[in-house]
Amino acid sequence: MGTREHERLPVNQRVKVQLADRQALFDLYLKDISRGGLFVETEQPLPLRARIEVTLAVDKDGALAIEGEVVHVVGKEQAAAWGCAAGVGVQFSNLDADKRDRLESYLDGVRARLDQELGDAPFDTNLIDQVERGSRKGDLYAVLGVDLKADDVEIEVAAEMRNQALGSLLARTDVTPQLRTRIAAAKNAAERAATMLRDPARRGGYLFRSSNLPPEQLADLVSRWPAVRAEVARQWEQAFPANAEESRRLAKVAQQAVEVKDVAGARRTAALALKKNPFLFELRDALRGWKE
Image (cartoon, rainbow, N blue to C red; front, side, top):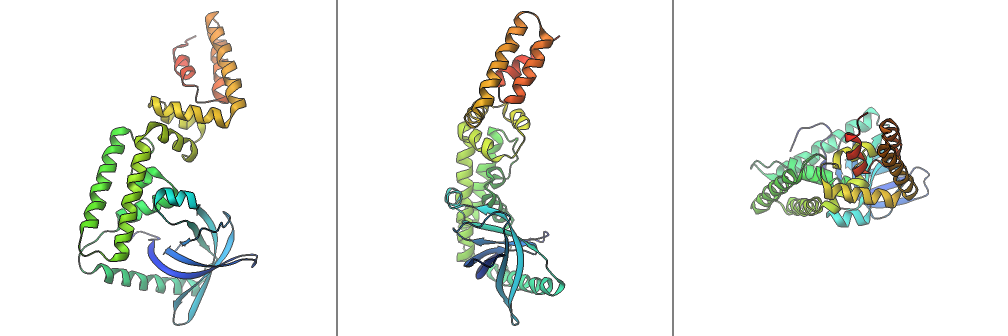
């Protein structure tokens, strides 16, 4: 196993999850855990930022109740698309010294069991962990191990490397059933991510919905890929029709200003149009040639 801080360890254990208002109690399955938090499988919606208490059996002294906050939600549809479990990520809070010590002892026991399952043969699960983290976040780029600037060639190379590496792990004869299930799910998730990102229209739609970049930065990012930027522009106009209409009006005024040699006025009006809609790529391209 890796030694990075807050290493997430796979677990399959029943836990009780209760909302802070004590109005709802859930009996769920814990899927992974670290010093800083955990992920529980559930298709029942738990609100983002909800305060909860998770109770799990950790040692001979009985159950450990840990307070936490829901910081990530993987819905049923997203989970189905990515081949991972629906559920919520929880960040621990208010851990006193006693609870922290008991949690550390529990994690040591989990590591020991996993090491025993893997046997003496070297087996690095970092790749599986990386794909699983990306899947839980719905981050296609993290699933493939590339950044948002990756072009078609980089995406294709990363997809092939993921396929070969995970395929090699599946071919090993010393893999436990639990780990084999994780590898297969990771391989499926990587294949789905590659399929999405290979398609310019689907990549554009994904970037528009999920990149979390400010619109101006997203426009700069996708401007190099014509088919991707066309889809992003289409999605923007659907999401903000009033802004799109006003930006087209301003772009027309800017073009008229250029025709009467009022370049300064054209540039000012174009800037207003792009503030309304940063994805007017033809106007962005024209603006570069409008010199005062």
